[in-house]
Image 1 (cartoon, rainbow, N blue to C red):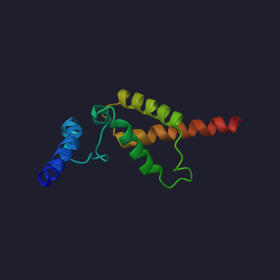
Image 2: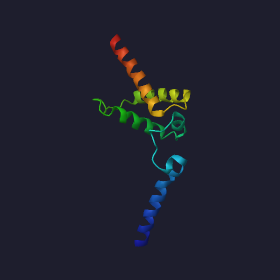
Image 3: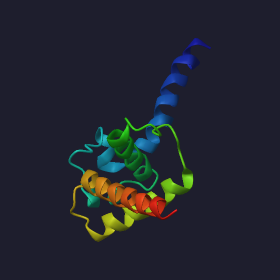
Image 4: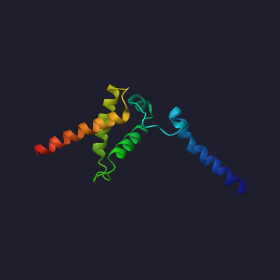
Length: 116
């Protein structure tokens, strides 16, 4: 039984590594978000793209008072705007494009709130 416990650890490691192997080059190490282009972002696996967008957005807005609130509808809308912006300019810096989309959306929200 002791031998099985040792093998179980290796099986667990192998199973956990399978999704990483599917990433290709991006799985070789951390994703360099500072150097990531929109084209590089769009080449990431679809399940990783929202994680990257959320991390960068949270990193840039981590000090706001509502940083702990998650509005799923707004996140989906934001990601759709970000996808469209990156598709239009694949060579642009991803982090700067994300900030641009964020600022545009914030300005639109402020304008909408003033009309109320």
